[in-house]
Image 1 (cartoon, helix red, strand yellow):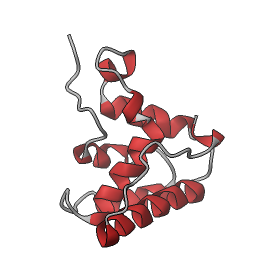
Image 2 (cartoon, rainbow, N blue to C red):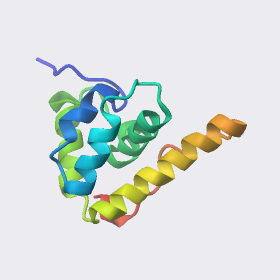
Image 3 (cartoon, rainbow, N blue to C red):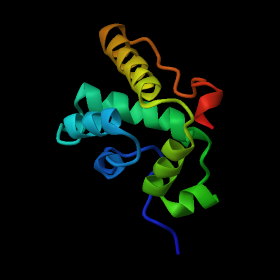
Image 4 (cartoon, rainbow, N blue to C red):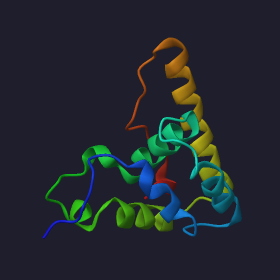
Length: 119
């Protein structure tokens, strides 16, 4: 009845998003998809996708959750109106946030407004 899904964007879905955008996006996915789940780049990618997918507002009985994280992520990436370069800058911001957290334990704002381009 329900899809196999998690509460937040899972790292194992990353490789499934390879062809969701253009060449720059594909290159990012290629680079990080073989890294371990605890690598800073994988953590940053997951944080970015949590923000874009709005995982914190996902309810387990919602249509979004029932479809699963892979389908939700693909749809969010299709709906993202910015360019791949803009999307990569969102990733870069998430990477900076994770680095900052690891350095000085500053709490990360997960539900950060990405902009009107995300929806």
